[in-house]
Structure formats: C-alpha cells, structure tokens
Image (tube, rainbow over all chains, first blue to last red; front, side, top):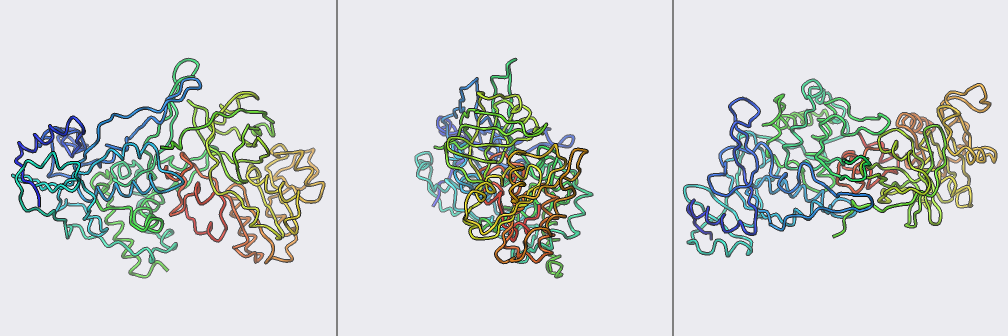
Length: 337
Length: 262
C-alpha cells in the first residue's frame, strides 16, 4: 500500500524534511555539459519537484553526496590534530535501484574489507537514507538486469513519479511525513529487461589466460586514461592521501583524501619510479576484472551494477558493455584455455 | 567510533646512516610487531608512506629508509630526539613457525634485506631451523646495508654476499645474485624453504631459477612492495585482482604470488 501525492504535496513533503534532512537528487546544470549547448545532469540538493531531472541519467553518480571527491581527514597545528565535525542533518538521496546496489558495493569496501570500518565513510553513510526512484525502463546504455542490480529492498521510501506521485514508505522514520496523504495501492516495480544486452561471464570461466589476451590491446590504442569511467562510476571507491601545509613554518595544514582511479596514470607509482600497468589496455583489463570478476571472488557479488555511466561519459566512445560481451565471446570460443 | 587514520606521535631515538641514501631510524615503540610488517610513517604536511620494519626489540623498532621521495626527503631532515607520526603495524609479516626445522635460505637484494633482516637475526640466534643460508646482493659495495652485521654473517659462514659491480677496493663476490643460487646447499629440497625479497626483476629471475632447480612452489615465500595510501584495505592502490597486498600480504607464498597479475 502506498500514499498518493500531487507535485505540490511532494514539495510540501520536501519542505517538512528540510529541518532534519538535506535531500539530493538528479538535477540539471544548464549548459554545463561537455559539449556546447548541452546540460549536465548531476546530483544536487533539491527543494522542489521541479528541481529533479527524471528523464535523463545523471552524468555523475550519487556517491559524491556522502563520499566527497576531496575530504579533509584532519587538520593539524603543531602537535594538535583535529578531526572536522559534520553537519548534524541527515541526507536523503533520490536514486535508482542500480545506484542503491552500487552503494552496497561501496559499503562492502569501506565497512567490511580490512580490519576496521572506514571512520570517515561510516559517519557520513550512517546519515544516508534512500528514496528509491522506481525505474522500469532504464536508459539507453544501462545493463543492470545482467548483474542482478535491477532490484532492491534497501530503500526507506519508494516513489513512482508521474502526474501523480505514489510513495511506499518502508522506514517508519518517514511515516509521519507521509501519513496524511490518501492511501492508494502501490507496489514498486523493477525493470526486467534492458535495451542493452550484456552477457557477464561466469567467474569460473575467467582464467588467467584471459589476462594476457589480445582483446585488451584495443584499449591501449583507444583509452586516453582520463579516468571519467572511474569518477562517474557508482562503485569506484579508490582514493589517494594528500597532505597540504601552509604558513611559513609549515606547522599548519591538513591531510586529505581524494578520489583516485585505476584508469588514471600514476595510480600505482611508487617512490623510486616503479610503476605497474603502464599500458592503458592493462589498466582497462585491471578495471574490467575488478568490476566483473575479482570483486565477486572476494565478496560473492559483482562490483559492476550496470548503471552504464562509464559508457555515457567516455570521450573515446569506449563501451564497457561491449568489453564485457567481447570477454564473454572470447570465452565461448574457448580462448580462455 | 575508532578512527584508523589517526597516527601516534613517535620519538626518533637514533638515526644510523647506512649508505649515502639509506638510513636506519630507531623509533620508540612498544606495541607488538612481526617481521615483514610495515608502518604508515608520516610527517603532517608532507605525506604518509608505507615503510617496512627492519628489526625490533624491547621498546623500539628499526626502519631502514631510502631517500627517494618527498616524504623520505623530509624524514632525512629529522635528527635523534625529533618526532614523526606512525600508524600500524599492517600486513601479515613472516611467521617463524612456517620455517621451523627446515633448511632455510634467505635470498635478499638491496633494500629487500630490510623486511627480512629480523628473520635472519632470529634464526641465527636459535636452533629452530635445521640450517640457515643467506644470499645477499647489492648493486655496488657502497649500497651494502647493515655493513657490520652483514660482515659478521659472512665471516661466520651464514651469508654469501655479492655486488653487481665491484670497485677497485672490492675483493668479494661480484655478479647477479642468481649466479650464487647453485652454490647453496640444495640436497634436501622437500625440507628446504626459501624467502626471496628484492626488486621485482630480482624476484622474478630468482624464483625462476629456484623452480628450474625443482624447488616446490609451496616452499618459496616472497614479499611485495606496492603503492598504498591506507594500509587497511580501503584505498585500492595495492590491490592485485582479489588480493589486497596490505591485508593478505605483503608476504605471500609463491604458489599464490604467481597468480597475482598486476
């Protein structure tokens, strides 16, 4: 069962949330696209229904809302070290099932991998609530169904956005905000078939021979290592530390972390000049294997959720969907032995 | 909530120059560590980097550091009595029990000696292994680390020392480390265990040579060096496929290491 709201009532709902929540959703930045006269769709704080862009996929994923591109870990002044405080407000994000599943992949790295949870990730993540955007048609370039990332039950409220808005409240936290609206039968639906057909190989067929296969060489000539695929990906979690000092005595400053990506030069550079995966095709292989092979081997689920943003953002028109299909085809032809 | 990125302020007790670009730092330290583990050392405002522990004893540990980057340059400006920052230890390290009763061969090149130095010292001082042979290689005589200790190991017959290129004063062995592998006592391969630590190219040719001599893969251990930002399985820099060098390594059995394709 759900609640029915008009768009004006949805705006009232958002208004009432403002005192305790910041609400983020896909929104348009006019003329900020990569090409002339194009818009960029990105995650922004929204105050009203009209702020939302629901017909085009966001260029960036919602991860930056709670995993900032650059984050101060602590400030230092002489011997004093201070961890920055966070805003008390909770964060509600309007997002699709693929992205909720993608955030599950981030959670796995930051909260479960290694000896302890990541303090900085966890303290923001604990504030996050999911407002699911029902997604039954997907976009041109997404392939969530192939990765079982088209469905989720991990939402606080699910919305169907049409002329009227239907809401299914799952978390009691939001019941008081929506209880006043009339009831109407509503069960959230999930996409069953994408326009893009992707065949994800079984991990037991992904052999070490495939790491050396010629298929990766294509990407050495095409990829320019810009890293857009990493920065737009909902599941890419890597970061690098960076210290900044100021003042003449360099006694004050901060330690930060910022996003890093395996597709970008310098990711493996060590002091003394040693580097790995210098060919961009090797970087592509490393990324591809992480997304659809080795993450599964470690955590029992694929990292890639098929949101398709990497295909949308690549300036060289490299398609990761096609890369996965090529790998599947190479395996079908028995070239993995 | 525990914040694993916060460091402790650590006193530098002593600094011993080893070569023109390597020095061993003695740090005040009283938490348990294992040989082969590493710390994240840092100087706020300059940066943080993983550095392996070369030795330890009650109340202190030793780290042999090469001046190769921004952080290590700043570390070289420190003097005894100054402080730096550290967190850790991280990584699995070497387990003494893996080598008990075996004929242990340690093959180390250049700064690769640092992470295994404690292992060598440990087994020289006790009878937990059936025998111990150490093979050490450095680029030139000027690059030899821990000169007094290494000389004592050579004098007592435990270690064979070679340099790639000698100089006019050098009277010892010359040539690549792989050349001296056949000189090791390899009579009982099933009970002989090998630790190989050095630059990637040395590791590659040394393990190839050992396999050629029919050494079982399960009897070879190697230690990896990778870029790391966190040391705790989050930042992704050291990941090789499904393996995190900072968590499951840096010490690996060769049987596993050979499948780690960067």
